[in-house]
Image (cartoon, rainbow, N blue to C red; front, side, top):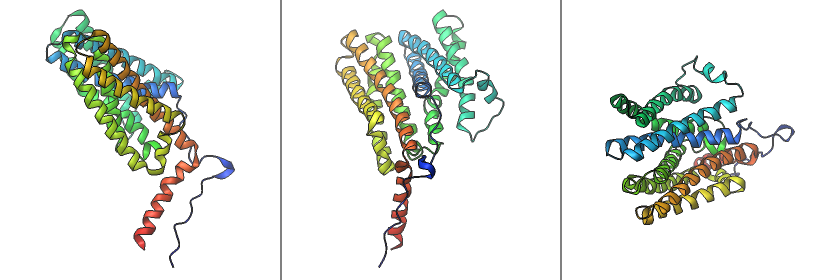
Length: 305
């Protein structure tokens, strides 16, 4: 007679969590996740607008991307505690470290985004501006998604367990934010790509999140309960409402387009803060840490029978 899989313990020494939750400040790092995504995806849409003759939208997105990456860097530096720690991270180039690569990425993307915005606003050096716009667009997708790799590289169950899906979720969320910004700041005659982008973002975000839930198994409950659950539900509602508004009314009314854009931006904020909250919840509750271990033992036992 074969016995069942051994029960996994859900406690630890002195009642402490099995792993240590990251000491990241929620507003700093979740804000860093969102702002980096907005900046990176915004540069991609800005380059598209630049190439297709949508100058007002291109200019607005270049300025918003520069603003977002500046605030993103400020949030990271604030979380580090001392401004000197950021340049210190540039003393080492370590391809296997997401934090090291992220620091170098910000250092490369920031000047490109700055030059793209400055030349667009002033009208000076258009060729240099086009080159900077292209450089920011190339680096933009990496900036929008590398924070997912950074989170998944930790031992936090809700992040590490979804390491394959999290970059796609962040990419879709970033696209929703950038599309929302384009709808808010661009004229109606130029917002067709933003409206299509909102649809792709909504579909992609939903698909990535569902895939992550399937892979996470019992740990997926951290995305459904508590603060994370409320934020993720709000994200789905806001993104769906923003997408519907953009598709149905975004080409007819400036007010409707701006309202849809704000809903998409808010949905992206909720997604990033929800993912952050789920990660902290999964690290602080030992049951969520041992859940994947228990399921892995059960699968191995079933296969051995």
